[in-house]
Length: 246
Image (cartoon, rainbow, N blue to C red; front, side):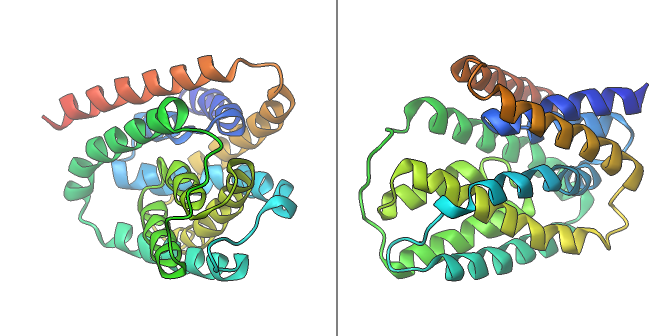
């Protein structure tokens, strides 16, 4: 029953990621329900959601671009290095400490998702970041993405639009760079004893199928309602994690 639940939740997470993002808000607690701790669940969730994420980035790769004097190739390199560093930091974090950090990370990611969904002004390009600022910002986001990942996409869209990209181009660039930074993290997590292969395979199958379905539903589902649902899930998860930690 636990694996059936995991598959069903991951299926919905895949749909959710394809349409609006926030799928890890569902897979993380469900993986914990199957018996693993927060650190192992985060590692396993990252690996499980990776195939669908790569497919999304690959699909929009032709519309991705560099920005602010930094080429896409350099953004690629920065993301790979930052994601790997974040993954190493995660595996070096004591389990008890990470368990206490998770509620705060989910709270941050939920707030960031809400801001990106309903408060960030669409379409604006500001050009306030220098090439060094673009590189440093992307590196910091990549480290965060390799470490936890929730909300990293909205951080990237905000940084890329601030540097001068149009929102639509920034979204495609973000999808490509998100897959890149997680690729380096996954490459490290594959050798971690915290990766639970049975759960990762079940969750990955569900998420990939969900991603295909989500891509076909993208013009049918009311995205605003979906985003509200994601925020509600994140808020409930935050409260539950804080109560459990207390």
